[in-house]
Length: 563
Image (cartoon, rainbow, N blue to C red; front, side, top):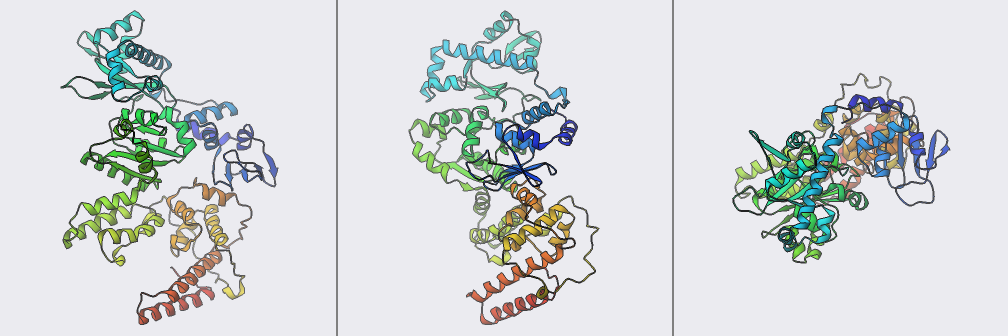
């Protein structure tokens, strides 16, 4: 693993123009450089690179980031590989944490064992026949390098005859040691080589065909083989994941293999463990739509619930497909139900809806006390989400739990304040704001929202000032960008686009005036909504219309009013 200090040092010397210019032709346009975007087809250049900020952004397809992200996306490689490529371009020496590196010798040992197991499977017809009966094709046996570990002495003899290191193979978990006896840990098992995202063998999974033994075992946990960071089949699926912007996560090796046979080439599997936060860096590559494909038993639903809660908090797109009736994806492929699979994968239940639906089903909603508990649990989950998502799902909770919408409270400021911002030293300007009658009103709300966000990007201490008065409801066009701002996700592509937009001109001390205009636009929309409201009583409607009109008058006089 490359040390973090080394990565930060590299970032200080990267010239993003040199890096990206080595892949595509860039032309200077003012203080920026432009090109036709390499990530989508276009004739008019909309891909902008800014040397000073060290960022790129395409106004056509929305991609953006720094030099490392560009190399990752362009070459479809991992973060570490991209860092190494750029270090080579910049002639920058990287430092590694030696204890975490899978040594070349270790990799060669594991590759040698994988080849041996694969050769044995091809020689032993009964075990190959078992896989064929399960629906695994000869082509898949080759594609996934499936193998067979026979009697223990066969593996030990192969190691001895080929001069391989027993001690190293014991350390890697391929062999075991019992006092003076060395034995094969995977004896009499079908072998599934497990690869790193870069395609190196880092361990094995083994399935027994005998009764009374653990059906599956994996290589023991180590720094090289961390089950919570690996996904089976990812090294094969990754090109398709990038291409189709989708990843299907299943629970088993055979699910992955059979799904690939059926053309679902984005399928991967966890290694006998739940999906964890340690998998997130792998799932973030290319930002694919994530589809959880889990069994319909209690264990599968609980695993899907935990994973969905985690993915929802990370604002990941995708959803859940639960397989009922004891079937799994592999069974459905064998039964030639690929059309059904395609339909299921095309319409997964979104993560947030799945979590809230499951919470609702775990309580007797006819019992007021249980309904109260369900509401508290739903709100606890809701408040882990971003402000935008909280607003979006208030109505869904009310519908699922059959409670009045006004009981669904959101928690905007808690989310924003959870960021590591200090209390601002900036104080409200003592200089009164100009009345809006003396300030030209903009008709372009999208531009206005972008301006407010760009002020905050230029001086992030302004965020605390902003959230005293506005939340995501004030941003009709740039809600996702403001949401990312509140989360501190400054690499969000929409924010990068705003940061690089030279058409958004900022005036000294102009932030609060733009904030005032944003508040006015919100109140004007609110007034229009109340005028069209049909569910309020005459008295309620009159009250809210008058209150909103009063707020508009105060705003026009230059007074900031929280929404």
